[in-house]
Length: 398
Ligand SMILES: *Cc1c(COP(=O)(O)O)cnc(C)c1O
Image (cartoon, rainbow, N blue to C red; front, side, top):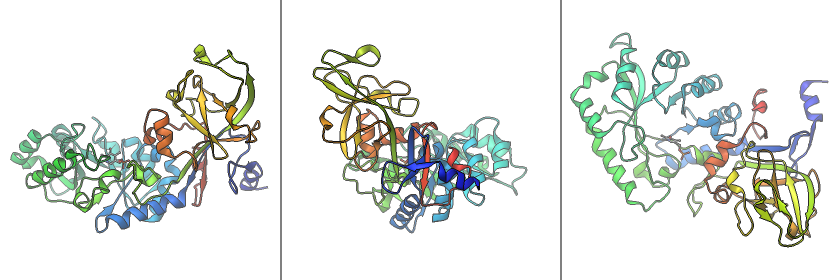
């Protein structure tokens, strides 16, 4: 029997129709690679004639770069952004022809590594610009890079003072082949925030001081602010993975990820009995609990914990919501299913954390965080199950 056939025999029916998952997985992250490709194409069409890059940092926001990067490249993405040089190395192996930018820029001493990988640092300070320029053998062989300017986020990027200094010492750029000048917005998730227009204006005002090369300002939320914000290249990440930060959910993308775990045990509590560490939840009525195989080591934030009288995290059984009660522990959560009498719930059943009933945004809100953090914290203990793409053999190990 082939390895593939063996693996297929070890698959069982999953959390929804037609979905097969490994028989021994206590939790699964289901990623629709075809929908990922469609999301990229939909954003590409929205921002044309600007180029649509793909941000694949954080292991494609926790979903698995080994599967996500080939799917994005197959859909047409040619420019990829990662955070670190190590991520660049992995992504280079998956996308031999892509332009890869490293958002963290030039970590001291990593010039050789970046050159070997063929990744371009996004330089954010004069010391980085100097170090990268010194790495070029001559003016005739300049080193390719991007330059990040700060327009008000005050995170990475050249400050106004550094940009002035650079403008007076243009020779610092002699050995650089600047491919892109970029900046990043602070409040793009609030379309009416005055900071958006302010940063746009600052970005425009800096252009005369900088090399005239392609420009980039917008990420997922920024591209929804309209064509004024698109410039030559947009850098969406979260939206590619189905994220919708705007309350109106107006970004033209679809969910691509679902997260499920399994029921280990059902147990009944008498009034007065407590649940979990520190006994934060005390049953006020006869209570039926489902003990579920997901904890903070899997990526279920401990902030989903809820003591008596509190409501934080939710999960869903066959489309019906049920609250998490007691502390989220490393490997387990406890869910109050008393009000789901009419839903049949058994040992081994699937429990939804993110999916048709609970959106990524709602999962984030119920854990006191954002969907981005829910995605990027999903641990390797949950099996990745990929749909609708050519998944390289090593991707499923994620
Ligand atoms: C992470 C990041 C992005 C992508 O942001 P999303 O909100 O996920 O689209 C774009 N640009 C920079 C500088 C980033 O750090």
